[in-house]
Amino acid sequence: MNASLSRALHHKSMLIGGVLVALLLFTALLSFVWTPYVAVEIDIPNKLALPSAAHWLGTDSLGRDIVSLLIVGARNSIAVGVVAVGIGIVFGVALGLLASARRGWVEELVMRFADFTFAFPALLSAIMLTAIYGPGLLTSVVAIGIFNIPVFARITRAAANAVWAREFVLAARACGKGAMRITLEHVLPNIASVLIVQATIQFAVAILAEAALSYLGLGTQPPMPSWGRMLNEAQTLLFQAPQLAIYPGLAIALSVLGLNLMGDGLRDLLDPKLARAR
Image (cartoon, rainbow, N blue to C red; front, side):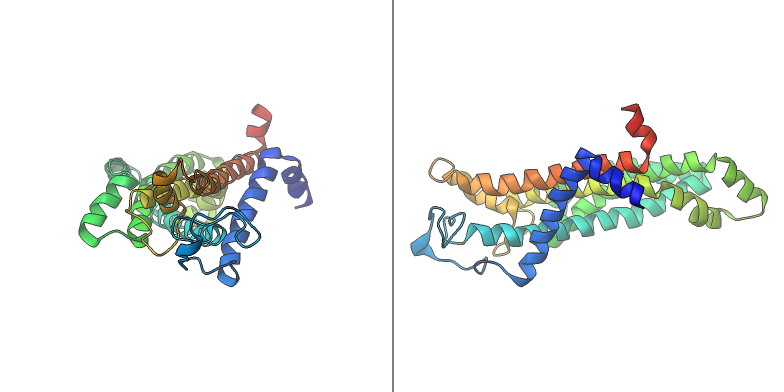
């Protein structure tokens, strides 16, 4: 444990990514107990105010405090990422393990399902779901989650196939263990590190996708704050108040960067052979 912590502290990508992710999580948790102002409170007389002691980053075109909007927006981004990645892990990992354990027509069916689902990226899925159920946070979560399923299914199946060829799995089969028991006791624990790394990457993709959907009006709806919708509302004021686009854009960029760096660091820490090869 101490050796792993020491390697993490000396790994630059892991350290920088961990700090950025910790800051994102802290901001999201802070939104539940404190914000400088009520995030959705409109104050027209103070619209487009410059940074000051009262409003640290100024206000937007409706007089809403930008800091408060960013803090609450972090909570929504985390919520979308957790649920969307959770959907991908639950269904994608299950399908990938099933394909690897059963092989034959089951594996072929699962992989063709994954190929079919890849034809519907998050944006296209969100458009279809919006046409049926209307825009909203739930629509974007489901759309991103559906996109994550084939990603995890493919990763799981490839990693599990490699484990099924190992000697200890062959020994377990010789002892009479069934496919389900081998999958749960031997295969899944040995591919957990791969899934953890992939989850951090997909978390970053989910945050980026949610921002894009909200920017297009398909995701989080008013009055709930969202980084993507803040960008949408700022585009008409780029020359008058460019900071309105800079702040949410910077928040999205730092969050995605932090998760990608942490994923890169976790990959090296969980598989030191990759770190030595780089």
